[in-house]
Image 1: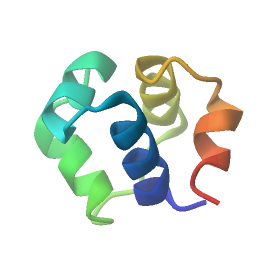
Image 2: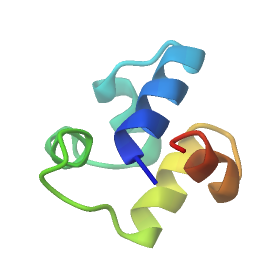
Image 3: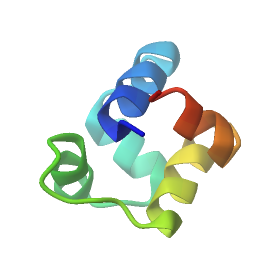
Image 4: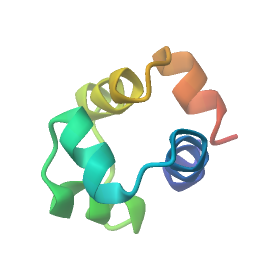
Amino acid sequence: MNITKSLDHFMYELRLNQSKLADYAGLDFSTLNLIYNKHRLPSLVTIQKLAVACDVKVSEFIAAGE
């Protein structure tokens, strides 16, 4: 799974920047930025929050990065 690819896909599809996606997911911008730049691995809870913010199932969110 490539989380950056998933994030890129949904940010493009939903026309969101990292700041907006972090807001929608209830995450701090710096946390999302660390995940995006592969300096931190997201927990399952964080992946779930990102999927909810993108209005997709976790499996769809993960599949977008493959």
